[in-house]
Length: 232
Image 1 (cartoon, rainbow, N blue to C red):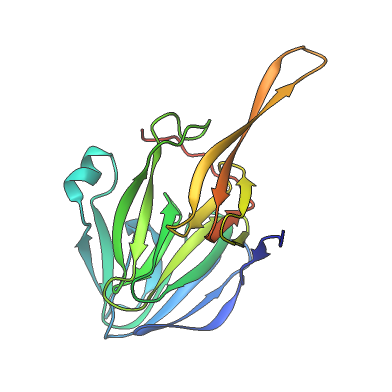
Image 2 (cartoon, rainbow, N blue to C red):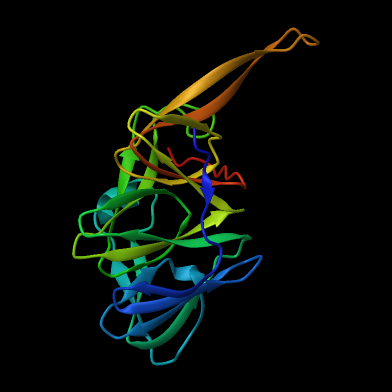
């Protein structure tokens, strides 16, 4: 098996529709976007680090607002539009990186990893059912879904620690610590994998649980495990 490969930690001249960007910073990296006025970017409310005054800010409604409200998810995002510069960061050490999505492509992202996206990307949520493990409980869990519906676009994510990518061939599998994955292609299948562990000293039986991903498709893996409380 080819091991997961680390994603770039610094980008000097990134290009997205209507946006040029750079990513830099060692401990808490920053995404710096230069907007040409033709394409907005949207993001969560608390991630703006600084911006030019001429960049306009407004709320952006999220598709499926009632469903998201019932599930305890946020109903609004924030959108920046205009010509000028704006920068984003999360208040945590980690790895900021882009995912380029050609028109018609989509990506599934775990909660609290999204940083920003171009306005050409449609944002919604998906509920992955049938997953039972020590992180998500019995009824599955919510993920963010980003789809390049109106044209090519870019989604920028924040991973905790560093982020590696594994490209799975059709039928190829990898076991990942439940808090260690960041994103996956929609065609990737996810199920739990449990291993019983018998301890000779205490004569007890424990369980080691992984998320098992099956290709084809990409899986993003972060080196700093994230175990937020489940909303289900």
